[in-house]
Every structure is written in C-alpha cells, then in structure tokens.
Image 1 (tube, one colour):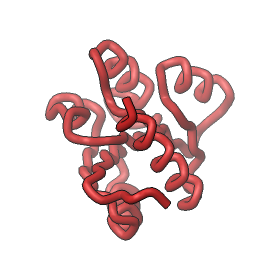
Image 2 (cartoon, rainbow, N blue to C red):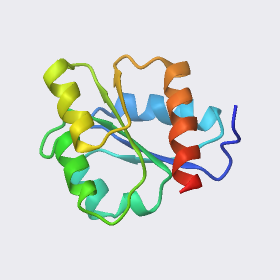
Image 3 (cartoon, rainbow, N blue to C red):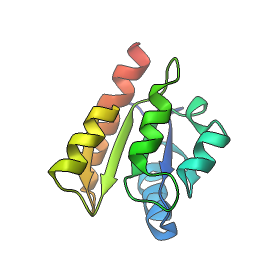
Length: 128
C-alpha cells in the first residue's frame, strides 16, 4: 500500500452517515479527510484546491456529481474524481466518464476497491 500520509480526500455526499463512515475508513487508512454535504459548497469553498482526490455521489440535491465534474473540467487543473452511486445504470456511468471521472463505484462501496482506486488516482495526480 502506498503511504497515505499528507494526502487529503474530499468526500462530497448529501448523506451524513455515509460521509462520516467514509471519513472513518479514510482516516483509519491514514488519509486526511474534508467533508462536504453538497457539490455547491465544495466548489464555493474551493475544496478542489485543498485535496488530492475527490469522492462524490452522483445524485445530490442541487448540483449533481456529473454537474460538479463538468464545472471542475472547466478549470485549469483539478484532482481526480471518483464517483459513487447507489442508482447507477449504463447511461449514468457513461455520463460520469464523459465528464471526466476516473472511477465509477457502486454503493455500498467495497473498501478494498475504493482504497485501490484512491492509491492509483493520487499516485497519478501527484506524478503530474
């Protein structure tokens, strides 16, 4: 496993329980974690400039995860985005990848698979 010290992950999800559960999982693995209950708050607070990777839900009140990805894609650079959903179908999956996500994970998220994607995403992001 790659060292996760000094690596920060943003969790953008409207469900408090899931945000807290992911925070516990990520912190146990050595990551720092920033929590956002909406894509709007994440973008307004420029959370993307503070983190090494973003975990985001597709379906949230207000701006969706796909819309957040589209907003991020208009920026000069941003961290990699892993999208999570309990409501995924092939059309949603296609939209997520077209908008620039590096992974599309179904909820409940498999912890080992999530950690594998995080390590890969952050390693590639930091390598530039």
